[in-house]
Image (cartoon, rainbow, N blue to C red):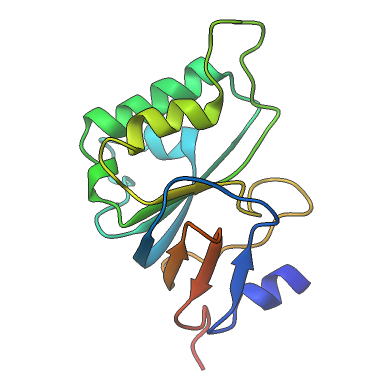
Length: 160
């Protein structure tokens, strides 16, 4: 419940203990927390979210790197990654190459898509599907500072 309480307050910050940022910068917009597999699966349906101008937060669990690469490539070639203000990657728990020794790390795969477009991005933000993850409210205006691995909320998640 403490994590939900933190997320509900205007001015609340999520700060990564350690953050890798291949593209340093700021992104400001409504926060859109998504499971990567579910996001791509919603494309072409009435449930497909509008990514334009969003601070896109991605996480996933127990996927192989080649599948994550496929999902990131879909986001890339569809032009949707170019529309976001910034991308923050949370926990990708139990995601690995599953013995494919020629596979790049997940950070390298994602960086290959985001660095050429200069979309501010960072990895290892404290959200995902683990018990230690923070709850991230949907649609709340936020700012992602990729250099610091810091997500700040510009408004409360709850109306008064």
